[in-house]
Length: 321
Image (cartoon, rainbow, N blue to C red; front, side):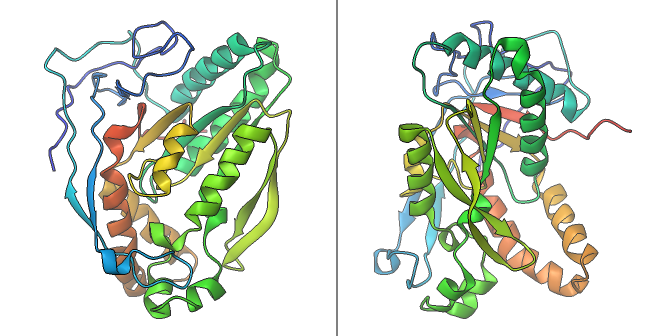
Protein backbone atom coordinates (compact mmCIF):
# COMPACT_ATOMS: atom_id res chain seq x y z
CA UNK A 1 0.00 0.00 0.00
CA UNK A 2 1.43 3.29 -1.03
CA UNK A 3 2.18 5.64 1.81
CA UNK A 4 1.21 9.26 1.78
CA UNK A 5 4.06 11.70 1.88
CA UNK A 6 2.80 14.60 3.95
CA UNK A 7 4.95 17.63 4.55
CA UNK A 8 5.48 19.08 7.99
CA UNK A 9 4.65 22.49 9.49
CA UNK A 10 1.44 22.95 7.74
CA UNK A 11 -1.86 24.56 7.99
CA UNK A 12 -5.49 23.76 7.58
CA UNK A 13 -8.00 24.91 5.02
CA UNK A 14 -10.82 27.34 5.27
CA UNK A 15 -12.98 25.34 2.99
CA UNK A 16 -15.55 28.01 2.20
CA UNK A 17 -13.27 30.30 0.25
CA UNK A 18 -13.64 28.53 -3.07
CA UNK A 19 -10.12 27.14 -3.17
CA UNK A 20 -10.11 23.53 -2.02
CA UNK A 21 -12.38 21.66 -4.28
CA UNK A 22 -15.49 23.46 -3.04
CA UNK A 23 -18.17 23.48 -5.68
CA UNK A 24 -20.54 26.30 -6.52
CA UNK A 25 -23.13 24.61 -4.33
CA UNK A 26 -20.91 24.99 -1.29
CA UNK A 27 -20.15 21.29 -1.34
CA UNK A 28 -16.72 19.73 -1.56
CA UNK A 29 -15.89 18.33 -4.95
CA UNK A 30 -15.52 14.56 -4.71
CA UNK A 31 -12.51 14.70 -6.99
CA UNK A 32 -10.28 16.68 -4.64
CA UNK A 33 -10.11 15.40 -1.08
CA UNK A 34 -8.40 17.75 1.35
CA UNK A 35 -5.87 16.52 3.90
CA UNK A 36 -6.06 18.36 7.21
CA UNK A 37 -3.28 17.13 9.48
CA UNK A 38 -2.44 19.21 12.54
CA UNK A 39 1.06 20.64 12.07
CA UNK A 40 1.23 19.08 8.59
CA UNK A 41 0.97 20.74 5.24
CA UNK A 42 -2.48 20.38 3.74
CA UNK A 43 -2.30 18.56 0.45
CA UNK A 44 -4.78 17.63 -2.19
CA UNK A 45 -5.31 13.99 -2.92
CA UNK A 46 -6.92 12.41 -5.92
CA UNK A 47 -9.74 10.01 -5.23
CA UNK A 48 -8.95 6.47 -6.24
CA UNK A 49 -11.48 3.73 -5.54
CA UNK A 50 -10.32 0.50 -3.97
CA UNK A 51 -10.45 -2.64 -6.08
CA UNK A 52 -11.98 -5.65 -4.38
CA UNK A 53 -12.36 -9.29 -5.22
CA UNK A 54 -15.16 -11.38 -3.75
CA UNK A 55 -15.41 -15.11 -3.54
CA UNK A 56 -18.63 -15.75 -5.39
CA UNK A 57 -19.49 -18.88 -3.44
CA UNK A 58 -19.85 -16.87 -0.23
CA UNK A 59 -21.46 -13.73 -1.62
CA UNK A 60 -24.80 -14.16 0.16
CA UNK A 61 -26.99 -11.90 2.20
CA UNK A 62 -25.49 -11.35 5.67
CA UNK A 63 -28.45 -12.64 7.71
CA UNK A 64 -28.18 -16.41 7.68
CA UNK A 65 -25.15 -16.28 5.43
CA UNK A 66 -21.71 -17.79 5.45
CA UNK A 67 -18.58 -15.83 6.12
CA UNK A 68 -17.95 -13.02 3.68
CA UNK A 69 -14.42 -13.18 2.36
CA UNK A 70 -13.17 -10.05 0.71
CA UNK A 71 -9.62 -9.78 -0.54
CA UNK A 72 -8.06 -6.37 -0.89
CA UNK A 73 -6.40 -6.38 -4.29
CA UNK A 74 -5.23 -2.78 -4.40
CA UNK A 75 -5.48 0.40 -2.43
CA UNK A 76 -3.69 3.44 -3.84
CA UNK A 77 -3.36 6.95 -2.49
CA UNK A 78 -2.39 9.03 -5.50
CA UNK A 79 -0.58 12.29 -4.92
CA UNK A 80 -0.96 15.09 -7.46
CA UNK A 81 1.99 15.99 -9.62
CA UNK A 82 1.78 19.63 -8.54
CA UNK A 83 3.14 21.00 -5.29
CA UNK A 84 1.05 20.55 -2.14
CA UNK A 85 -1.50 23.31 -1.77
CA UNK A 86 -1.21 25.58 1.26
CA UNK A 87 -4.80 26.30 2.17
CA UNK A 88 -4.59 28.68 5.12
CA UNK A 89 -2.24 30.34 7.53
CA UNK A 90 -3.49 28.51 10.59
CA UNK A 91 -2.40 25.31 12.25
CA UNK A 92 -4.36 23.45 14.88
CA UNK A 93 -3.25 22.11 18.22
CA UNK A 94 -6.50 20.87 19.76
CA UNK A 95 -9.51 19.01 18.42
CA UNK A 96 -11.80 21.82 19.52
CA UNK A 97 -10.03 24.17 17.09
CA UNK A 98 -10.87 21.88 14.19
CA UNK A 99 -14.44 21.53 15.45
CA UNK A 100 -14.83 25.31 15.51
CA UNK A 101 -13.69 25.64 11.90
CA UNK A 102 -15.79 22.75 10.65
CA UNK A 103 -18.88 23.96 12.51
CA UNK A 104 -18.46 27.45 11.08
CA UNK A 105 -18.11 26.13 7.55
CA UNK A 106 -21.08 23.79 7.81
CA UNK A 107 -23.31 26.49 9.25
CA UNK A 108 -22.33 28.92 6.50
CA UNK A 109 -23.02 26.31 3.85
CA UNK A 110 -26.43 25.41 5.24
CA UNK A 111 -27.38 29.06 5.80
CA UNK A 112 -26.51 29.84 2.18
CA UNK A 113 -28.98 27.17 1.07
CA UNK A 114 -31.81 28.38 3.32
CA UNK A 115 -34.98 29.20 1.45
CA UNK A 116 -33.91 27.22 -1.61
CA UNK A 117 -35.88 24.14 -0.70
CA UNK A 118 -32.66 22.31 0.06
CA UNK A 119 -32.74 18.97 1.80
CA UNK A 120 -30.77 18.10 4.89
CA UNK A 121 -27.02 18.47 4.71
CA UNK A 122 -25.58 14.99 5.21
CA UNK A 123 -22.06 14.57 6.60
CA UNK A 124 -20.37 11.19 6.94
CA UNK A 125 -17.61 10.81 9.56
CA UNK A 126 -15.47 7.71 9.27
CA UNK A 127 -12.14 6.30 10.42
CA UNK A 128 -10.80 3.19 12.14
CA UNK A 129 -12.35 1.73 15.30
CA UNK A 130 -10.93 3.55 18.30
CA UNK A 131 -10.08 6.50 16.09
CA UNK A 132 -12.12 9.19 17.85
CA UNK A 133 -15.12 9.46 15.53
CA UNK A 134 -17.66 9.52 18.33
CA UNK A 135 -15.81 12.24 20.21
CA UNK A 136 -15.61 14.39 17.09
CA UNK A 137 -19.25 13.96 16.11
CA UNK A 138 -20.58 14.73 19.58
CA UNK A 139 -18.42 17.85 19.79
CA UNK A 140 -19.64 18.87 16.34
CA UNK A 141 -23.29 18.34 17.24
CA UNK A 142 -22.97 20.43 20.40
CA UNK A 143 -21.06 23.26 18.75
CA UNK A 144 -23.37 23.47 15.73
CA UNK A 145 -26.41 23.61 17.96
CA UNK A 146 -24.82 26.29 20.13
CA UNK A 147 -24.07 28.50 17.14
CA UNK A 148 -26.97 27.81 14.77
CA UNK A 149 -28.84 30.98 15.78
CA UNK A 150 -25.84 33.11 14.73
CA UNK A 151 -26.54 32.04 11.16
CA UNK A 152 -30.29 32.46 11.33
CA UNK A 153 -30.89 28.73 11.54
CA UNK A 154 -33.54 27.25 13.79
CA UNK A 155 -32.78 23.66 12.89
CA UNK A 156 -30.22 21.86 15.03
CA UNK A 157 -27.84 19.08 14.04
CA UNK A 158 -28.49 15.42 14.73
CA UNK A 159 -26.06 12.49 14.98
CA UNK A 160 -26.86 9.04 13.61
CA UNK A 161 -24.28 6.39 14.61
CA UNK A 162 -23.85 3.30 12.46
CA UNK A 163 -23.59 1.22 15.66
CA UNK A 164 -27.37 0.94 15.88
CA UNK A 165 -27.33 -1.20 12.76
CA UNK A 166 -25.35 -4.06 14.28
CA UNK A 167 -27.14 -7.33 13.68
CA UNK A 168 -28.85 -8.62 16.81
CA UNK A 169 -27.05 -11.44 18.58
CA UNK A 170 -29.89 -13.77 17.65
CA UNK A 171 -29.27 -12.93 13.98
CA UNK A 172 -25.59 -13.79 14.38
CA UNK A 173 -26.73 -17.11 15.88
CA UNK A 174 -28.55 -17.85 12.61
CA UNK A 175 -25.49 -17.41 10.39
CA UNK A 176 -23.66 -20.38 8.89
CA UNK A 177 -20.80 -19.99 11.38
CA UNK A 178 -22.28 -18.33 14.47
CA UNK A 179 -19.05 -18.72 16.47
CA UNK A 180 -17.13 -16.73 13.92
CA UNK A 181 -20.00 -14.26 13.49
CA UNK A 182 -19.89 -13.39 17.19
CA UNK A 183 -16.08 -13.30 17.25
CA UNK A 184 -16.03 -10.95 14.26
CA UNK A 185 -18.86 -8.72 15.44
CA UNK A 186 -17.97 -5.24 14.24
CA UNK A 187 -16.78 -6.46 10.82
CA UNK A 188 -18.72 -4.92 7.95
CA UNK A 189 -20.69 -8.11 7.27
CA UNK A 190 -22.07 -8.13 10.84
CA UNK A 191 -24.05 -4.93 10.18
CA UNK A 192 -27.45 -4.53 8.56
CA UNK A 193 -25.91 -2.47 5.78
CA UNK A 194 -29.05 -2.58 3.64
CA UNK A 195 -31.15 -1.24 6.49
CA UNK A 196 -28.53 1.41 7.22
CA UNK A 197 -28.53 2.68 3.63
CA UNK A 198 -32.34 2.62 3.51
CA UNK A 199 -32.62 4.62 6.73
CA UNK A 200 -30.25 7.33 5.51
CA UNK A 201 -32.01 7.49 2.16
CA UNK A 202 -35.31 7.99 3.99
CA UNK A 203 -33.78 10.93 5.87
CA UNK A 204 -32.73 12.51 2.58
CA UNK A 205 -35.96 11.78 0.70
CA UNK A 206 -38.53 12.41 3.44
CA UNK A 207 -36.71 14.58 5.96
CA UNK A 208 -37.61 12.35 8.91
CA UNK A 209 -36.70 8.89 10.15
CA UNK A 210 -36.43 6.82 13.30
CA UNK A 211 -33.03 5.18 13.67
CA UNK A 212 -31.75 2.54 16.11
CA UNK A 213 -29.08 3.15 18.71
CA UNK A 214 -26.88 0.50 20.33
CA UNK A 215 -27.13 -0.56 23.97
CA UNK A 216 -23.62 -1.67 24.93
CA UNK A 217 -24.81 -3.07 28.25
CA UNK A 218 -27.40 -5.29 26.56
CA UNK A 219 -25.21 -5.91 23.52
CA UNK A 220 -27.99 -5.24 21.02
CA UNK A 221 -29.60 -2.37 19.09
CA UNK A 222 -32.50 -0.35 20.46
CA UNK A 223 -35.07 0.31 17.75
CA UNK A 224 -36.34 3.85 17.04
CA UNK A 225 -34.13 5.37 19.76
CA UNK A 226 -32.89 8.24 17.56
CA UNK A 227 -35.38 10.51 15.83
CA UNK A 228 -34.36 12.72 12.93
CA UNK A 229 -37.14 15.18 12.29
CA UNK A 230 -37.92 17.98 9.87
CA UNK A 231 -36.24 20.60 12.09
CA UNK A 232 -32.79 19.03 11.78
CA UNK A 233 -30.83 20.86 9.10
CA UNK A 234 -27.56 18.91 9.45
CA UNK A 235 -27.26 15.16 9.98
CA UNK A 236 -23.86 13.79 10.99
CA UNK A 237 -23.52 10.06 10.38
CA UNK A 238 -20.71 8.25 12.17
CA UNK A 239 -19.36 4.82 11.30
CA UNK A 240 -16.41 2.73 10.16
CA UNK A 241 -17.54 1.68 6.71
CA UNK A 242 -19.05 4.78 5.15
CA UNK A 243 -16.52 4.80 2.29
CA UNK A 244 -16.35 1.06 1.70
CA UNK A 245 -16.42 0.26 -2.01
CA UNK A 246 -18.70 -2.76 -1.66
CA UNK A 247 -22.45 -3.19 -2.12
CA UNK A 248 -24.58 -1.82 -0.60
CA UNK A 249 -22.15 0.49 1.24
CA UNK A 250 -21.13 2.16 -2.01
CA UNK A 251 -24.64 3.62 -2.31
CA UNK A 252 -23.76 5.97 0.55
CA UNK A 253 -21.75 8.02 -1.93
CA UNK A 254 -24.99 9.37 -3.34
CA UNK A 255 -26.34 10.23 0.11
CA UNK A 256 -23.56 12.26 1.74
CA UNK A 257 -22.87 15.85 0.82
CA UNK A 258 -19.37 15.38 2.16
CA UNK A 259 -17.31 12.80 4.03
CA UNK A 260 -14.61 13.20 6.68
CA UNK A 261 -11.92 10.74 7.71
CA UNK A 262 -10.50 10.94 11.25
CA UNK A 263 -6.86 10.11 10.58
CA UNK A 264 -5.72 8.23 13.68
CA UNK A 265 -2.64 6.01 13.65
CA UNK A 266 -3.87 2.42 13.72
CA UNK A 267 -1.57 1.40 16.60
CA UNK A 268 -2.87 4.31 18.66
CA UNK A 269 -6.46 3.35 17.87
CA UNK A 270 -5.85 -0.27 18.90
CA UNK A 271 -4.24 0.85 22.16
CA UNK A 272 -7.36 2.89 22.92
CA UNK A 273 -9.52 -0.17 22.34
CA UNK A 274 -7.27 -2.22 24.63
CA UNK A 275 -7.57 0.40 27.38
CA UNK A 276 -11.32 0.60 26.89
CA UNK A 277 -11.81 -3.16 27.08
CA UNK A 278 -9.50 -3.80 30.02
CA UNK A 279 -11.00 -0.77 31.75
CA UNK A 280 -14.35 -2.55 31.96
CA UNK A 281 -12.78 -5.73 33.32
CA UNK A 282 -11.80 -7.74 30.23
CA UNK A 283 -8.74 -9.94 30.69
CA UNK A 284 -5.77 -8.31 28.92
CA UNK A 285 -4.93 -11.47 26.95
CA UNK A 286 -8.54 -11.81 25.81
CA UNK A 287 -8.51 -8.18 24.73
CA UNK A 288 -5.28 -8.60 22.77
CA UNK A 289 -6.72 -11.64 21.02
CA UNK A 290 -9.89 -9.81 20.07
CA UNK A 291 -7.96 -6.83 18.78
CA UNK A 292 -5.62 -8.98 16.70
CA UNK A 293 -8.40 -11.16 15.32
CA UNK A 294 -11.09 -8.54 14.76
CA UNK A 295 -10.47 -4.88 15.54
CA UNK A 296 -7.16 -4.56 13.71
CA UNK A 297 -8.36 -6.30 10.51
CA UNK A 298 -11.43 -4.05 10.57
CA UNK A 299 -9.22 -1.02 11.08
CA UNK A 300 -6.90 -2.00 8.24
CA UNK A 301 -9.89 -2.31 5.93
CA UNK A 302 -11.15 1.14 6.92
CA UNK A 303 -7.71 2.73 6.52
CA UNK A 304 -7.79 1.58 2.91
CA UNK A 305 -10.75 3.91 2.29
CA UNK A 306 -8.93 7.01 3.55
CA UNK A 307 -8.23 8.58 0.18
CA UNK A 308 -11.90 8.50 -0.78
CA UNK A 309 -12.81 11.06 1.90
CA UNK A 310 -13.44 14.73 1.11
CA UNK A 311 -11.65 15.91 4.25
CA UNK A 312 -8.94 14.17 6.26
CA UNK A 313 -9.04 15.37 9.86
CA UNK A 314 -6.02 15.13 12.16
CA UNK A 315 -6.13 13.05 15.31
CA UNK A 316 -5.59 15.81 17.86
CA UNK A 317 -5.91 15.88 21.66
CA UNK A 318 -8.69 17.73 23.39
CA UNK A 319 -7.91 21.00 25.10
CA UNK A 320 -6.76 20.52 28.73
CA UNK A 321 -9.33 21.54 31.30
